Image (cartoon, one colour):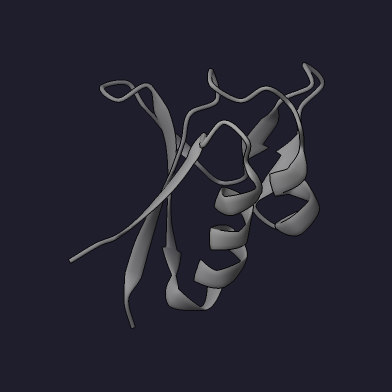
Amino acid sequence: MAKYKISFDRELCIGVLACAGVAEKFYKTHPDGKVDLIGGTFNAKTKRWELIIDEKDLDVNKMAAEVCPVIAIIIEKLD
């Protein structure tokens, strides 16, 4: 089964919360008005939050990325 990496730029997030609306299992609203990537770890090099997901979770996260107006969510397939 393929693995994918979600890369989330929290600084770029403007708090529209659309991602949390379509993928509440992965994105939750933070008290500061932005979202957090649930289970994500911060990559100090890229300054982005990252999470490895299985193929079964790809579609819902693709939808979350598509509804983000500032393209703060990027998903890439891992080898």
